[in-house]
Amino acid sequence: MVFVKEESEPEPWEIKHEEPGGLMKVKEERQELNEVEEKHQCQKDHDDNGEKSVSCSIQITEVQRPFSCSQCGKSFNHKRSLMKHMRIHSGEKPFSCSQCGNTFTSNVNLKNHMLIHAGIKPFTCSQCGKGFTQKRQLKDHLVTHTSEKPFSCSQCGSTFTRKTNLKKHMVIHTGIKSFTCSQCGKSFAQKGHLKDHLVTHSSEKPFTCSQCGKSFTRKGYLKTHMLMHAGIKPFTCSQCGKHFTQNRQLKDHLVIHNSEKPFSCLQCRKSFTRKTNLKKHMVIHTGIKSFTCSQCGRRFAQKGHLKDHLVTHSSEKPFVCSQCGKSFTRKGYLETHMLIHAGIKPFTCSQCGKSFVCKRILKKHMSSHAGMKPFICSQYE
Image (tube, rainbow, N blue to C red; front, side, top):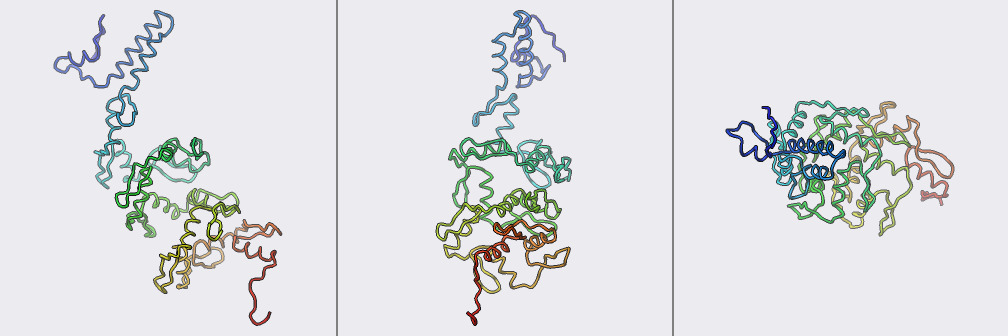
């Protein structure tokens, strides 16, 4: 319907109340109409005075985002946008997936989710081939292939790939821990940290790999695991050429090429490359051995020690070298062995320059330079 402007144009709210019988449905949000009026007024001021008036600039700024959230202060152009935003604070998720029961705050999010069930992943990473249902997901993923972290915390210097991650991190410095575990009362600064914690109270692992049957507590862990079956290892060590499915695995690996061990045990002075390894080590000093072998009853302080022990009860060697046929009890041993065929020897002796495929062999070699002979014959001295 076309409106003809008269000498005295009625205000938007006057149109809303005076229109008879619903000749025109006027939206509650008057932003577009306001902007047209302001543009017309600005042009008029410009024509009359030769320049844009100060009052005009102020007028545009005032109506830019008139709808503000009372809880977080975020402002919006339209009331409907504010109402959608308020669902975040209320926890309301009225849109439900008919296939899996997942709920969402908006219909758009539900539609994007439905692509997962349809198996449609139109956005593909050019570096590793991983597919995504949304362009935003691909953008988030791409930062894993670069070491660039442009967003830095002004308080502790931690750097992040995304501004949103920095914002989440800043909550830690405020000391506010809004998310509390209902089972043990422990509080967390971020919702994601609470989710990670909650799995410690449950043995449930609902996400199962369709190829090998291994189960996981979180969907993200299953996705990462599936990269192994796909043979995708986009993260490569620049020093030895070893490949990894995750950037975190590469970071963990890189410390073996560095002799620096900044984390030291106060009781035995043993040092470690990572803080997590020190924490695991400290369990030994407590004398607690929570992991028991079901076959011989022997107990261990760490789960990894029990896994290493279990292979002594079995003659099975499931990991076989494709080049020479040699088999191994653990995947890690096979990976170390493969370095021999590749001719890669990343561990070099600082005294004679001799290189080795693994750190353990280098340590044994170093004893020859120290004149150490730890193995003594009991019959001949």
